[in-house]
Amino acid sequence: MKPKACPFCSNNITHIDYKQFEYLKKYTTGFGKIETRKRTKVCSYHQRGLGKAIKRARHMALMPFVVQ
Amino acid sequence: MKQFELMFTLGEDLTEPKARTVAGEINKLIEKHTGKVTHHVFWGKKKMTYQIEKNTYGYYFISIFDIDGPAIEALTKEINMDERVIRYLITDFYKDTELPVERGLERDPEAGKKEGKEGKEEGKKDEKKVAKKEVKEVIAEITPEAEVATEEPEVAQEVKEEAAVKTEKATKKSTEEKMKEIEDEQARKRMMDEETRKAELEKRIAEM
Image (cartoon, rainbow over all chains, first blue to last red; front, top):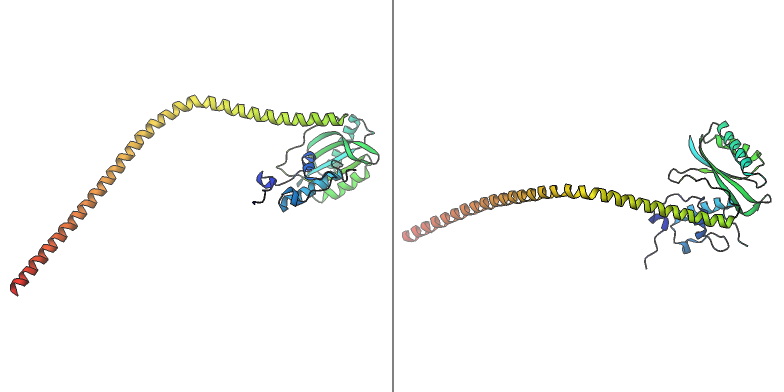
């Protein structure tokens, strides 16, 4: 089985913007946690960017820390 | 000088015009610290995902500005002093990212979101359609001329090809002829050699 390609690498996206929080919701669980790399199939470089973007969005109350 | 992006939220106790004036004051703060605001946008009144200082809604503003790196520290101090700002975030601005667009009030957050989503999608689709149409039109405009244009070169190409084939043939012929001549000469030489050898051998035999 081939490993699934990183969606950011294949679309040539270098910087992940925290303002696109609706798109970033795709990479969080139902409880608002950041999804692991095992599930998202994102490469390590972009996973780091994703984490940073989600944390920034959380700080600005655009995304939840916890969904109750 | 480096490009930064400042996002800040103001409390819901303000009205929209008041919030805008406060945002203007913060932009003045940036300019006070030798910064230049290149892009300023009201990003809309949003429902925040959690309460901050008993605010459920917030006025979001984004301003992109050029400033020297060390001046950021003093700026953050001054923004911290302002109690009307609930939250703020200063980040590097990447040139490739799209500039934020002005958004209106979102009194009904769910409806607003839906509208916003639809609007975005529609906008994207429209853009794509327009782009496609333009491309098609351009192609339609080009094709008749292009056909005429292409016909001539085709003829020219044919002529050229023929010429090329001829020249190739000629060169081939010439090379073949040369090769033949060379081969003939070699064959003649060989024949001559053989004849001479035979003659010599016969002479020797006779002598013997």
